Length: 218
Image (cartoon, rainbow, N blue to C red):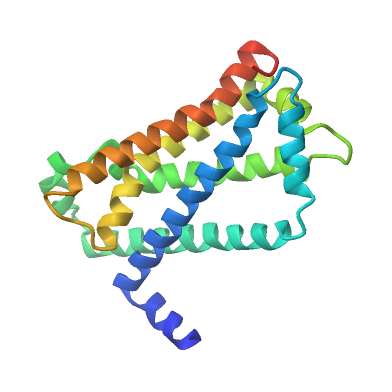
């Protein structure tokens, strides 16, 4: 099993497949994460969100899930950066990029940049709501406290917009890498990918925007 994984990691095609699979898994996590976080707006005092956070935090499997999620991020980011560097070395003059300019999108052209921004945003997010949280502190109150700060709210908006731009290409790219690349289905995949990116982006943007400008839940 280990030797098989090593062979995959040493193959360019294998690395692309792993990046695609880990990317789809991370998109699934984002969907679940947003669904849970939206309980913040379920009532005016944040009780539903605090109950959700407490249930999640008391789950004995949470540490295992966090380790697995961290590994997903590290593998996805590490292999994606390696593939990007390999592509740059293979095309030092960038002729293929210029030749395909009309088929490229803002999302596809900025995948590395937005990926780095999302990583920085993730580190900030973990610091604010995982490492900085003290025992007994309401998660809803912590969200309101942190996102009421102009600098933090701005950082979150930038990070979420980078995530949306990244996702606008990531879903379609992942499915194409895994073989779903057909004239009949590609336009549908593209629309679904853009719609998914838009929903996730707008959903996560609710938090910094409504908390900063509204000052409270709902």
